[in-house]
Image 1 (cartoon, rainbow over the protein chains, first blue to last red):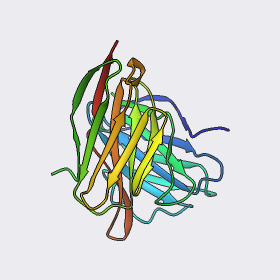
Image 2 (cartoon, rainbow over the protein chains, first blue to last red; image 1 turned 180 degrees about the horizontal axis):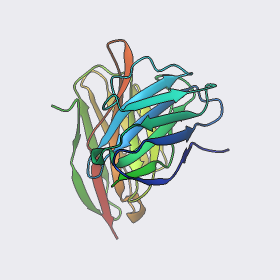
Image 3 (cartoon, rainbow over the protein chains, first blue to last red; image 1 turned 45 degrees about the vertical axis):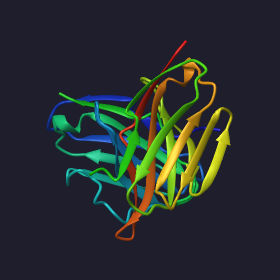
Length: 114
Length: 111
């Protein structure tokens, strides 16, 4: 079956522009996660959805970042007024449920802010 | 101080060697993941553990909840095992789920 997909795979944008990253989870997966992997750095947890709800947004790096999920399926991560330090690979993962289910990762979106 | 510590950071092994990668964490967790990332590639979840031991092919993962420690073992290592291996823990903080990652172990297996 289809895995987690993300689009675009690559995005180059100018500093100050807004970008929207999309994640399509595996069908039926209720939990969805966004992570970031900056060049030469480790993975960083951004936000978690259970259904359409993200109860804790404290992992988002700044108020320029927002995320939403509709219909318990597709999620979008929006970065407003992008900065060069936002350059990273943004990864999405989904799982069947909450804490004790395997996560399946998407291929990521490589964002470059020039 | 990072909540999740991995060792070693880098590891070079000869093909066929038995490999161990360690992960220690300092907080109570609900589950621990071992992830694999090949150079330029995506992330694959190898194991999710909340207790005991799991085995998949040449890979074995163990966890000791009391000691807050997990190990990933690779038996009969092969060059295709060359990758970064990442330990990740799931925990509940302030009532919310959170995932924290180790910095990864870069493994190179030489033919």
